[in-house]
Length: 76
Image 1 (cartoon, helix red, strand yellow):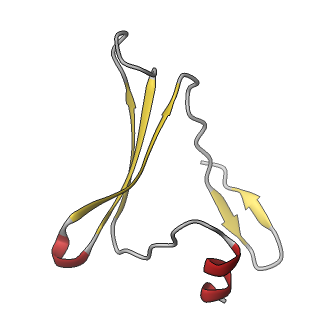
Image 2 (tube, helix red, strand yellow):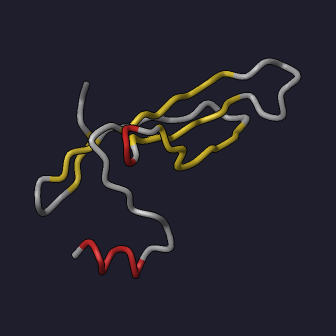
């Protein structure tokens, strides 16, 4: 199934024991108000950057749960 997803989606699917998502509010003279950095632990415990996203809108964070038949919002 994972290989099928990789073929259908044109994005990298990375499996890692440690994943970090950082949302950094930038200074006024930066190109965008927010920087979102997605990184993971790669081979030999190295920190690998998967994506850097820039936006002027405050990022929306949501956590969901896959119940097998449906994906639902998780209430924290």
